[in-house]
Length: 185
Image (cartoon, rainbow, N blue to C red; front, side, top):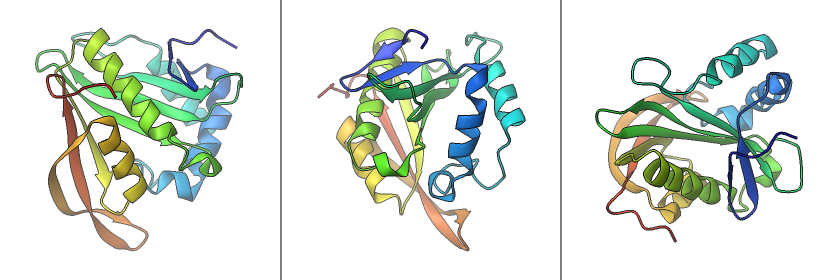
């Protein structure tokens, strides 16, 4: 297994490898996983995920890719648990949008989302020197919202009926963490 880029109490974080596209595509095909993803309305293929993984190997620069995408797994295990990343990084505004998925529904509710959020906020603020990290979450994703709040995100606003999920329109909550307000628990 490649060496981790980051570690937290129970998790390792590293770049995806091209051979992991089948596992990532399988996770994203699961309707339970993709229902809360902004991009989850269309099918995922192994070939498409392989191309996406290849694009993620380029480091962010001022005029190019602006994402840091990592796969995440449980320490002592090689299997990927899910993924996380900072997207649309703006070096001018010192901001990014955070994303997460846990691809194994049987692992939901164990605090991994909160642990991933805290780790990525620490990386964003202490390593990348960002000022603001925001996220969007479906208003009915109660477990996710509680996890994000526990990690230090604050509700900022609501986009009313902004996403269509499973036959109905849902609100999207906007949440953010600011560097000078965030305190690692």
